[in-house]
Image (cartoon, rainbow, N blue to C red):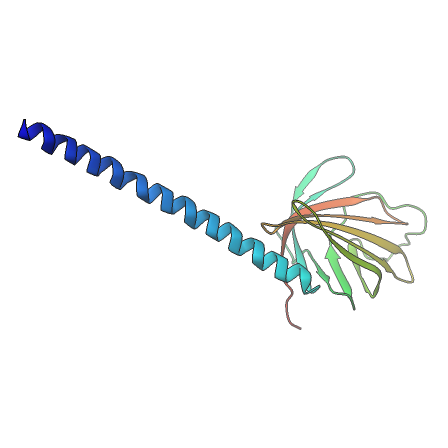
Length: 169
C-alpha cells in the first residue's frame, strides 16, 4: 500500500513538474510578442523608420528574393528616400538613362499613419520632377510589413519585408 502512494506521488510530481515549464514558456512567448508590439508602436509613432525589402512581387505575380544591396525605404515626415529595385514595365515618359529602380527621394506631400486591428496603414505621396510616387505600407504589429509603390511612369510593384529603426546618417 505504501509503495502505491509513493508511486502516485512520484507520477503526480512528474506530471505537475512538466506542466509548469510549458506554461512559463507560453508566457515568455506572449511577453516577447507584447514587447515587440510595443517597440513597433513606438517606432511607427515616432514617424521615423525604415522598410527593408526581402521579396519583390511584379504585377505578373513573380516573386523575386532580394539578397543584394540594401533595398530600403526610409520614412519620415520631412523626407522619404527609396532605393528599391524595379522588375515591372516602364511606360511613356521613362527616358533612357533614368534609374532602373524605384530610386528617389523627396518631401512627402501626404504622410498619414492610421492604426488598424493588425497593425498600421501608412500612406505617403512623393512628387519629384520626373514622377509622382504613391507608397502604401501595411505594417504588422510584429514588425513584418508589405509595401506597394505606384507611379505615373511605371507599373505597380509590391514588396514584403520588415520595418526597423531608421539608420542615422
